[in-house]
Length: 199
Image (cartoon, rainbow, N blue to C red; front, side, top):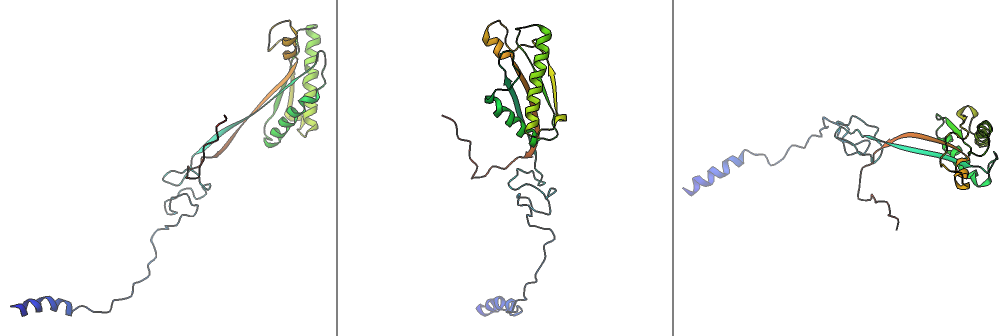
């Protein structure tokens, strides 16, 4: 009986070959690489131009974020003057640099005056002040057609009052530029750091 059991176990093995056929090299049906290294294989990636480390969805497409860059200019003037004091040259330079980076933007320079003097005189003075700032920006490379001026005279005071502090705040030229820029939202990784808090 033991012989039959032994034969029953050995006979199936007798038909097996001891040499295995070599494995055939196969090519994958889908491209499993990740060309833009965003974590989504190329076969499924609908956006192969992702920015490195961008936050992407399951299709390999990343959303974008809008950043608002804003640059203001405020230049104050001495009583009855339209010349720019040297301490405001930094304001002029910053605005000129911002406009150089955003060539599609135009700037409206608003001139103002304090309530000292006649209304007509203050209107003309406010226009002269705005024109002075316009010329200063042009000297820094900003094209004149990108700079418009308007004089409001004493009609839009920033501070009400007859004291010198109010008058000084109202003798001004102001302008504001806003530029929307679009960038990729970046993916968090172990090397990401929180900005250091100011203490």
